Image (cartoon, rainbow, N blue to C red; front, side, top):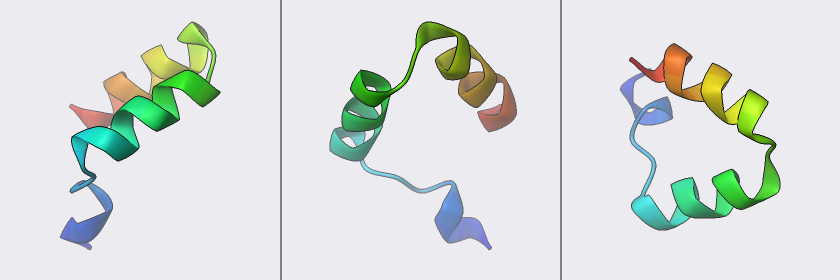
Length: 32
């Protein structure tokens, strides 16, 4: 399921806007 990790920069930025910094941190940690 490699597609899950391949999100566009636009999608990423939109996602960041909709989420709190705390959730953002969790997302980044899970992304690495």
